[in-house]
Amino acid sequence: MSLLDYFRSSKKNTASTAKERLQIIVAHERRKRNSPDYLPQLERDILEVIRKYVDISPEQIAVSLEKRDDELSVLELNVTFPDDKR
Amino acid sequence: MAKIIVVTSGKGGVGKTTSSAAIGTGLALKGHKTVIIDFDIGLRNLDLIMGCERRVVYDFVNVINGEANLKQTLIKDKRIDNLFILPASQTRDKDALTKEGVERVLNELSKDFDFILCDSPAGIESGAMMALYFADEAVVVTNPEVSSVRDSDRILGMLSSKSRRAEQGLDSIKEHLLLTRYNPERVEKGEMLSVEDVKEILSIDLIGVIPESQAVLNASNSGQPVILDKDSDAGQAYLDTVDRLLGENVPFRFLTVEKKGLLKRIFGG
View 1 (cartoon, rainbow over the protein chains, first blue to last red):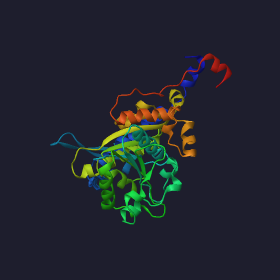
View 2 (cartoon, rainbow over the protein chains, first blue to last red; view 1 turned 45 degrees about the horizontal axis):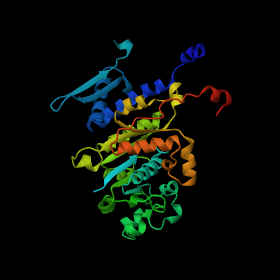
View 3 (cartoon, rainbow over the protein chains, first blue to last red; view 1 turned 60 degrees about the vertical axis):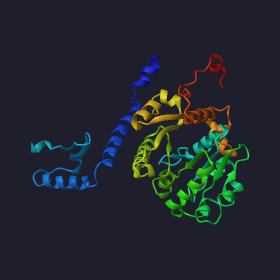
View 4 (tube, rainbow over the protein chains, first blue to last red; view 1 turned 90 degrees about the vertical axis):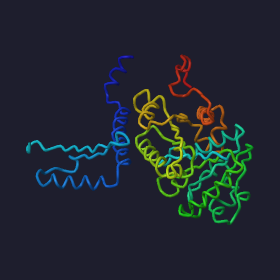
């Protein structure tokens, strides 16, 4: 590797940025695709309930339903609370 | 019984028709009786890529509506035996295709062809759904670029949920990744997603990598499927792809930058 290449590689590699972004969005869309139709409504309802107590925005809540095997499905709920309310 | 293969992508302009023409021609070159069907109703282009645009009399929709029979409608390729084209209608829209109509035509073709290649339109509307519905295998054409990869993943979702095989609980469609417009130089510089990156994201089996090549535009300009340009990199990459589709184990080529010799570097070329 020449000296010139060394300086070049310190720049952000756009291909790896593309890969990271794709991995996140594709995983997200696959989860949505394989989840039941009621999940978006469930997510909205949970959001409303939490909002009665804490002011959070829709981005701060993530609901996913993951099928582990034929008998077990796990409903995962992630809520990010704002700092000042802690 | 013919094997039905859909060539699809979700995104437009990634090389579906170019690939359909090349792969269909390649299968026929190998001695398999092949028909390529243009499912892009209203935006017919396979005829132009195959160089038979002036020989279109009837089209797919005419056959579905019973206004013409297959024998009158199929265009026999003048260069290669065993190769036929079923052109799309230019005047109708996507809704002219019905599931029953398409099934009837496919069943009839299935009787005396080995391969039926369905050249899908872009998008996820009825035309694209019709092209993939009856498929046994799918070639998902993808460019190493974010929007194309995302759309391919969307199409993979459709293949596994909206196809006949999915609805009837049969074995799922065999999915293959065909990476097109690949530029090893840009991959080496970190400017383009690599074969491995795309494979990892989509997690399907790789059937071919077609390098970005001047031969492709030259081929479409002259109405010759690029696979007939056997000296070109893209032509050879399509020949390899066809071999793999037929179950052969062929090493991948054109994945790395060709090292130029000292003389070439000095004098160019």
